[in-house]
Image (cartoon, rainbow, N blue to C red; front, side):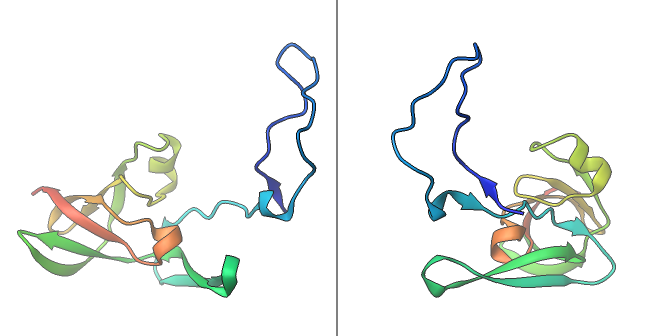
Length: 126
C-alpha cells in the first residue's frame, strides 16, 4: 500500500489548508522496512528513481565491526539500545545509531541497513 508524504488537508483546529499543487507520483513512499536480527540473511532488491537499485536488508545475522581501524565480521546477538524508538529494542530492529551486542562487545551501527543492504558498526565498549 502506498504512503503519501504530504501534509494533512486539515489544520489541528479543523480549518482547511488550501492546496498549492496537486498530488504527484513523487510524493508516494514505500512501507518502512525494519531490519531485524535473524537466523538467515534476507535481502530484497528494489528499483528506485532513475532506474537505479537499492538493496533492502530485511534480516541481519552478521556485522562488519571496526576494531582499532581493522574490520572484522562478527555475529549479531541482540539489540541493546536504540535511539530511534524504545520499542525497536524489544523487536530487535537494527537501524543507524542502534547499540548491538556482539561477541566482541557492544557496538554502534554506523550504516543504514535498509538503504545500504549491510550492517557496519564501530566497537563502543568491550
